[in-house]
Image (cartoon, rainbow, N blue to C red):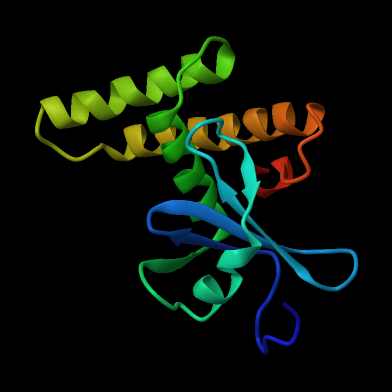
Length: 144
């Protein structure tokens, strides 16, 4: 996986609407992590490296770290359910978005800032939980 000129790691993507990150390994290579819709954790997906880096075979969009955090939390909030503080915050975001849809309007600047701030917070909280559970793909620092 080495030798891709101009590739700066870590790098962040949406691959068919699924958040993916490519991170450096201690050996000088790269590891690909794709978000799991079942657990909200990271699944190693090194087989996607060339498809993503060379944008082969489909919808691949490069994302900034901030966009990536928002994408991950939108994805988690949509696909996951559960109990606890993270899920209570997901419900808060859902209520704001549902109001936007119900009232057939765009989010106000204040609502947008609220949603973005909550998603940064839930990203760090979720990633810290993953890290405590020993998950090698977890990285709360992206959201800080």
